[in-house]
Length: 257
Image 1 (cartoon, rainbow, N blue to C red):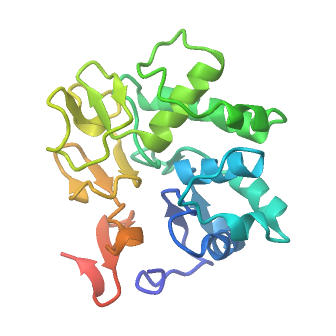
Image 2 (tube, rainbow, N blue to C red):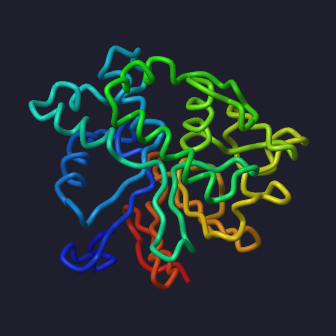
Image 3 (cartoon, rainbow, N blue to C red):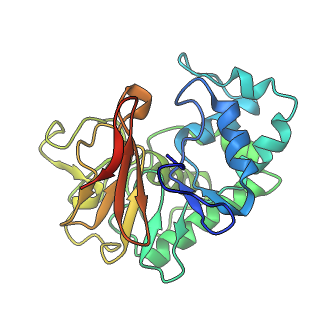
């Protein structure tokens, strides 16, 4: 993909939409490669990245995890420290485009989204990050409130940034359904399609939702770039300076017209 994009690390920067690990057999090689790109690469945290950090600090492994090579690597501590310092949100200098792993609750403005991301990032980069990781899992709370505090507040923020797909019209998140739009219960909408979403003036680019079935949703100005490469689908990229989409798989690759 980087060859297709004519990526020049001296002149360009590549942003990854998270889940650098546990989405294929080469998690260790992927971490080393992206970390090795230095300032020419940025990545937001995905749910699988956070899961790796939790497992590394005593959390329970999943049945389909492919993390053992990372956990046994001689440079694991350096890689894990690099990973936990990744942001939840990346924004272009003009604020017109933002990259995140999963979604934003409709109640948040971009200013709120930025502030909430900073709260979690400060926790992950601080001395109490392992304690937070042990209490990160769970689907509640499912509705944003300004008076949320402590672990419930941080859990809600993490869940939105790394797991969100559907909300009801009041902004209550449902973290369980993962199918394409049209397969969900009638009261649910894709998070980006909830009426009066307060982040709608910013172009949002995300991953996570491999079953979404459509990359660009012009009526909502969002790009869902996870096209299921881990399941045999394509790997998709968006060139931010001209909004061209590129896709690559085992047989055919090129610009998407």
